[in-house]
Length: 134
Image (cartoon, rainbow, N blue to C red):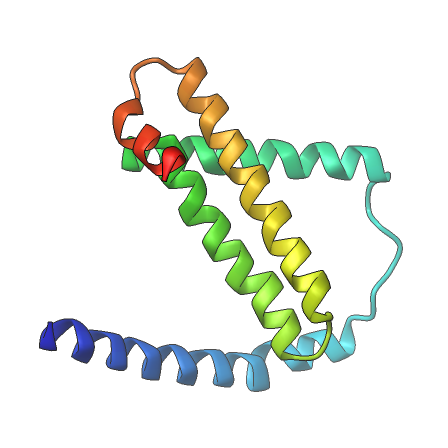
């Protein structure tokens, strides 16, 4: 347990330093010189690209882990932290909107993982079933 705490503290410290330095010296200078422009694709095509990339990510993580629902939960947790939590804490999104976003992300990824598991029979569905049932 002590090793995990030490590893967590060291990871948090390095993560904070790299993130802060990256934002201040890398991201912000680029963002300030690169104003938003019109979307590069029509909305429907952009949505299709997003879905295809999401499915490819789920497929890759599912193959690595062997449990599609667990893979989906890991992806959704990451996305919730990066989008819903971060935006609320920076004041760019209200709490109710952040919570709604988190629920939508969780439901979307979990259902995608469940469908992936149901259609691909050689996954570890017993372990995923326990995740879905509580």
